[in-house]
Length: 186
Image 1 (tube, rainbow, N blue to C red):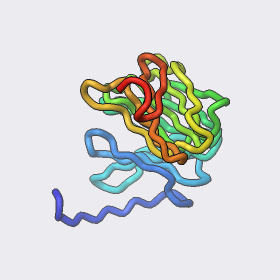
Image 2: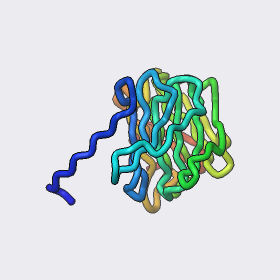
Image 3: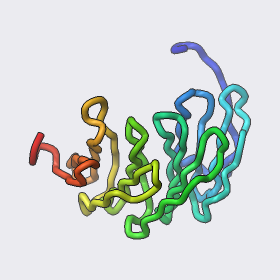
Image 4: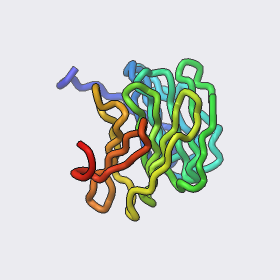
């Protein structure tokens, strides 16, 4: 509840946390840390580490959880993205597009069908999470991607991408087309 103070301290990473996300049921937090290839899953009730996920070979930069609560995704500095089942914490797939470079942001669509990976090179790669295959790739800017969000009801296939060039780009993942905000069709 808002206003209630509850202190839980989570300890286990040896370096600064680089990303964290809460599962949709609110029971766990998944974290990664700078210079650490281990992803940790924490129980919020106790603050204890439930699992350490060891499949990455390089430092993990990002974590994301699907909206349906069934999957988690982790991305390392090489651009390798791993898919995990949240009920078993089993690694179920590997998605990697070497041309996309280091993944700086992950974003899952509201219907849990797509995963977008944004990089500091301005590239965005779209993955179909059901078949773990790349369905689109875009270089939107020469500057980095600094924010991404998928649209809500009625706009589920739209990915809004903010870049360091101060522009917001819109990608219709169903059409594989991109437009800078304010240009093209609304």
